[in-house]
Image (cartoon, rainbow, N blue to C red; front, side, top):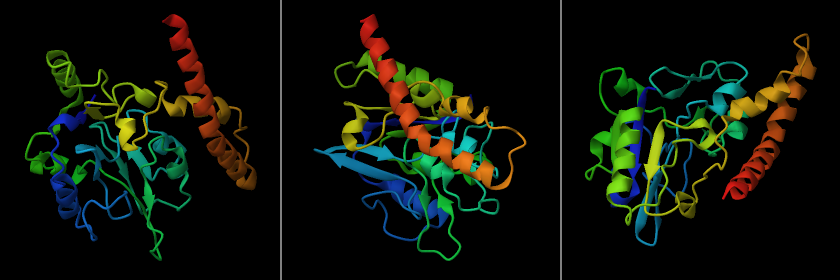
Length: 252
């Protein structure tokens, strides 16, 4: 299953060391922890009534951004990280449309812009090190390890102290699951973070339309088909979420 990160909101003190450490590890300019992610900020800490939660790329197990990229600029490594190759990118920004979490950001102010997001500190992982955010976290709110082991730890924490935790592990199953797992004292959507209500990997939904596009299609026809199914994605996801919600209520 590869590497993962467990973020425990109940342990976060809002020191923003993760955002600062990320910028240092990637030589990113600009102020740490701005109000929102941008082309030079890969992770931020959000605050709600004195409680804190992190926002950064979830590194999905079945990444919608990877499936949407027409040139292979995005790919998921066996170790877990979803990485980006700026040399291959053509700037179509399909990945930005496809991402269910609204994470990738575009360098609009650059003459040669890139799509930017957390890369799971792949340069550190290849050296046998942890991600920068996990290294600098003073309370252990951000923990790096094997996803399967972190998932078990998350379950144990919730079970051992049910009064402190919302009874859900965010990232375990949403949109097929992700390498980033989050536990908190409340629904993290309260912080403005997106929480997909479906468990089906988004590329599986897309394929139902893509498989109908003739393989002989070329040029403008293929491009228009790609634009069509990408813009349809949000509607498909909304319909799937409504259907799953209805089914869940029917089983209660």
